[in-house]
Amino acid sequence: MEALLTAFVGAALAEWGDKTHFLVMALAARFGRPGQILAGVALAALAGSAIAAVAGSLLAGLITIRALTLLVAVALLFAGIAGLIGERAPERALKWTQAPFLAAAIGFFVVEFGDRSQFLTFAIAARYDSALLAALGATAGLIAASVPATLLGKQLAKAVPMRGIKTGVACLFLLAGLVVAVQALRLI
Image 1 (cartoon, rainbow, N blue to C red):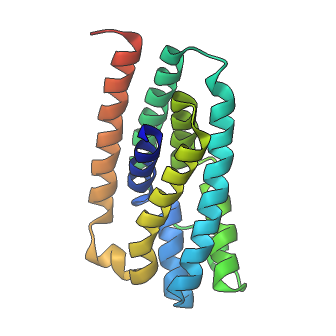
Image 2: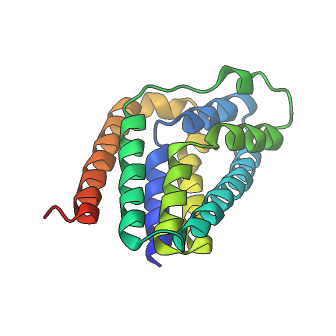
């Protein structure tokens, strides 16, 4: 259950202010069909999280638990650093004329691939050797973070201080990464 909860929290926090978050807001504003957009996001989140989790679980038996814990620390530090970098929705995805479901599914999958939440999912699945729980947790976290963006569209960015939240979350990731790294390296 640790993998499920850790992946959920990590993915949900990593998405706030991320380029996929802005993509979902823009698609919601453009198409105005939150159900179809959220369904596309859910499918893409499940596919991307499953790929990351399976890859991570393949690594689990190959290296020591200490090295896997250090991998989680690196993923957290990466998420923190990436969170301090400004992002916006990819312009190409906003010009698509497909149905909202397809635009959300394809756009979210492509933009999310190799992103910080996927790296966190990979590391968590490896650390806990649980592809299923890590994938389900990350998927649920991605969907949970996308719900407000889908329902409010660009109004979310006006109502919520996105930059402040993104910076705060980045600092949390950096702090968590440092704590996990110190534990993995047994410095204290």
